Image 1 (tube, one colour):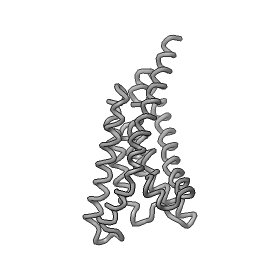
Image 2 (cartoon, rainbow, N blue to C red):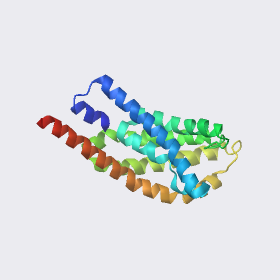
Image 3 (cartoon, rainbow, N blue to C red):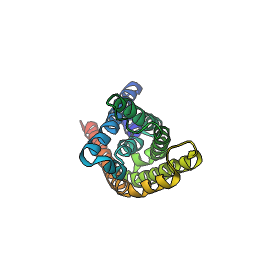
Image 4 (tube, helix red, strand yellow):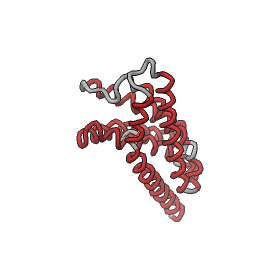
Length: 197
């Protein structure tokens, strides 16, 4: 979405890359901070229910397109793990890390594939988020089913966590598209304002 709007505004290639890089770093920082805030406020069950790390990744997909969002999706759990390990409480836990990296990569790529459509009509953000959620969670469950002989959790355990996280997915399915629609509207108004002056 952002790329199409920046192209319409005749932003230079360097300007585009700089803006996307800044946004990507900001989204990764948000993906690290949000789970910490949720865990402090609501404890571990809050994280399982609200799935806070997914929110910035979905925003990244809709806003930045799949390539940049893929970096956000893969790096968010890695950076979170690295920083929280220094504090003695790694999040996500090491055995879960590769599964989350794969899941969030799928979230990013699937939502990012809708980015051009979203630039034309913001309502595409709703199916973008839904498709990303569905495919990302399915990949997580599928990978656990395949590797459960070496993972410290089973497909049944992950399925119960998926069921427990329905509230977070429902909130994100509403909040992310509304946020993207609002951002799109602001960016397009700014473009029209610039054209008038």
